[in-house]
Length: 252
Image (cartoon, rainbow, N blue to C red):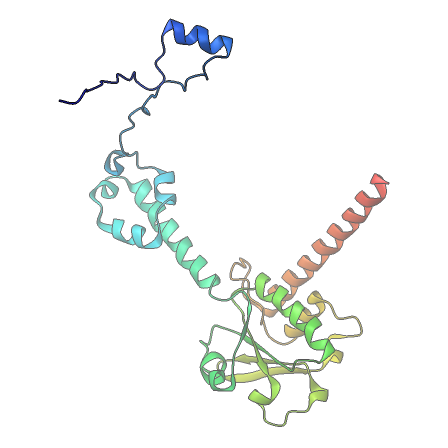
């Protein structure tokens, strides 16, 4: 019969007094600390969680719709009213967030994306061609406006895809659509004055109609209200620029 050898091992991290002395003298490497399992934490039971405003705030639009017949909310008028308010806010936010950038389209997309846009949506179309210097500047300004006014639809299309043989000398051109009809057109950079700025483009777009819509205006979606909002943004921008300059001078 073969010889059998038994090897006894302590738990990880356990050591004898002799081991400790030898480790101090450097004859043995220090042992790893004893293993300790993490403390048990029971999983949260959503049904037992307190139902308050924060509980409602964490819900998605679908979750809030599903809570319509929740018996607990039937007994809590405040929570039920807050649920309805929060659901309305999420729906409005979803409407506002439907645009927010300048979207490229082709000639075959034009009718669907522009002519058939809902009557409550204003559409700004930029006709452009690569290689025309002014195109980049105006496109940059339109991207800025699309972010600030996400309830207005901004699209871009190569000029000859939209209008065959459209002259390059007229580029860039802006077309403003609503309810399937052209409401305004602005040909070339000269339409926006000698010194073109995002605020200047915004004011030109709103000359005759409330084209720009941030989706949050509380004072009514009228031409006057939109123009007043554009002017307010412009003044805030100028004040901020002056404050930044003053800070730069004071740090010198």
